[in-house]
Amino acid sequence: MLTSERKALIQAVLLRDGRVVAKSLAQELGLSEDTIRRDLRELASEGLLQRVHGGALPASPAVADFARREESGSAAKLALARAAAALIRPGQIVFLDGGTTNVQLARHLPRDLSATIVTHSPSIAVELVQHPLVEVELIGGRLFKHSIVAVGATCAEAISRIRADVYVMGVTGLHPEAGATTGDSEEASIKRLIARQSAETIVLATGEKLGAASPYRIVPIHEITSLVTQASVCDEKLAPLRAAGLEIVTA
Image (cartoon, rainbow, N blue to C red; front, side):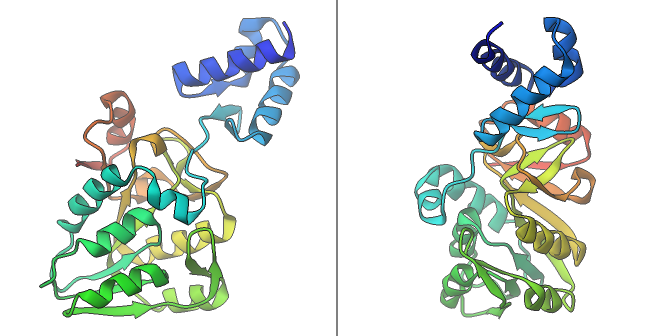
C-alpha cells in the first residue's frame, strides 16, 4: 500500500470512527505499528488530525484568526450566546472567557442584569459598557493576539485572587477522553486556573468542536459542569459527553 493510500485510509477511519488506534489499524492492515505512527505524525504536522497516546483524534477546525472566526458560523454562535445568557443569574460573579461566541454572549446579556463580570478579554469588557448594572473587572497581562485575551504571570496572579460563581469557557475542542482543549499552552494554563477558581464551568461549543481535539488540554470532562451547543448536533456526538456527566443545553 502506498503512503498516500495509507493516509487516505487513516483519514477515512478517523471520519468513520472518530478515532484511530495505531495498534489495531496496524494489525488490520498487516503493517508495523511504527509505519502507522509515522503516518500519524505526518498527518498531524499537516493539521489533519491530533495525535494522542496510542493513536489520533480529529483535529479541531477552530484555528483561524479572531477576525475570520467572528465571520464564520455567526448564526450558530448567536444561538449559543442567547442560550448561555439565560443561564446567568442576577448577583453572580461570572468569569467570561475570550472568544467570538463569548463576545456575542456579552452583547446579549439582559440590559437590566445586575452582576459582576470578570474577564481577561478587552473585547468583552468593551461590549459590557452598554450594560449599566454590570460591574466589569478587567484583568490585564500580556496580550495573546490570536484570541485577544490577557495571559502570563500578571494575569494568573489576578485570577488567583478571584472566586467566581460561573466560568463561561471557550474551547477549540471537546472530547470525552481528551477533555476540553485549545491550541496554545499558555492560554490553556490560564483557562485551567479560571476553571479551578470557579464553582461551575460552562463550555460553549459549536458542533464541529465536539469529538475534536487540540494540542493542549485545559481540563478533563468531569471538571466541566455543562455544555451549550447546537440543537442540530447528532446524539452520536452528545451521548459520550452526556455519559461522562455533562449537562447539555441545546440552542
